[in-house]
Length: 235
Length: 235
DNA sequence: GCTCCTTGTCGAACGGCGTTCGTTATAACG
DNA sequence: CGTTATAACGAACGCCGTTCGACAAGGAGC
Figure 1: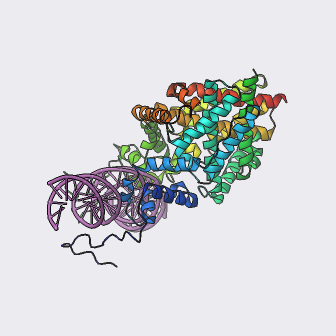
Figure 2 (figure 1 turned 45 degrees about the vertical axis):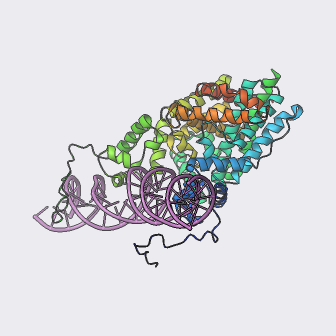
Figure 3 (figure 1 turned 180 degrees about the horizontal axis):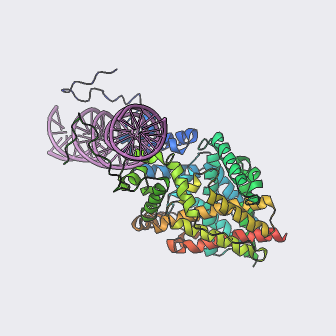
């Protein structure tokens, strides 16, 4: 129990600068990323970041405009880990898939970061732009015109975000195994309670919907979409 | 300025039941949906629903387990508006697309409701299941085996969620025009500040990325994916 | 050397959120 | 008529992002 400072002498605690690393934009982002990797997106709040840096929440605002900006900085840092290839016209379809895979991989390492991408209308951070340009370059090397490439790139980045988010949720504790199992039981029970044959396909499909098939589902969707692109190029 | 009641006589306000409609699960959901349609998802909080029903937040918990359950009830109600077709093997590809379009249409009418679908691990509500089964039925009529149908259905529902969410954000005030324009300027400025030719494709692609092209982008992605499915069936 | 001003720090508070606790008023039942 | 079950709900708890204003330290100008 610390005694409150006497009112006639304000600020009795001289800042111990030396003991504490100086606050900076990079330090804030770095700390946030550590928490993100360890505890997931929901656990990263301005207050908890400040706590970890042994300061008050207000201090962060000297280095970061607000939470939204910090979110974007985190996302940008994560995307910085994703390399971009030299476009190869002979191999563009595989390059497209690999690029999306890498984006997903990077985002899954920071569970929930994909959520940020959903709330960002127009991504403007350097690494976002780098990824966007790289994807467009690959697609154009494959023979798509600009408009087609832009539309395809948009859909692909959407894929990446969506699957990264889903995969994060499965691998991380966003919803736990017990709850999912309970829901599975609820669903089966409900379907069986109805007139036989009301849900003939769904009843059999539970096996394909686990967290383990997540990767297969991802690859399937990617293959279908890129297959469609290939048909488009041939036409 | 109302005077607080004297402490020796508690609860001075007799409940005027007659004036107020009785609270019920349906009433809570209905009220929440009205607010959702009018003000968007973020504006729907337990406290504001209660306020609108002229009661306190605690009263809602007699009819709804928590916010999450209420969210799912809202989503289910929205999906209830989406009809399901009789599968037609001759026309399955178009049926698939139309089903996704309808789902998106329904969700866009309640801005932000798509967000709920992302946070629901296994959808178990009746209308969710009905939609899932309908999609599987169409796909199987088209000639896909069960596993393929499940994977495709998963990807398609993901599409629906994603585009519904994006479209909500554009048409609704989630991010306003001024901010988007500012970001566009930032992006252009940044790209031009770099060595010429660093972003050759992105520089020209701004015109395709507005809210107006949202529908075109959606149709393109859908066409590509379903095109891929058709190739798969033919093989 | 002294003042002034900028800049980073940060405690306290504001208004929001979802949820829980414990009390009260009403209706139904014995 | 008394008792009990239940819905209603005020108040509070502990979160959240953000703002305000006071304060310390360092450098600039005189």
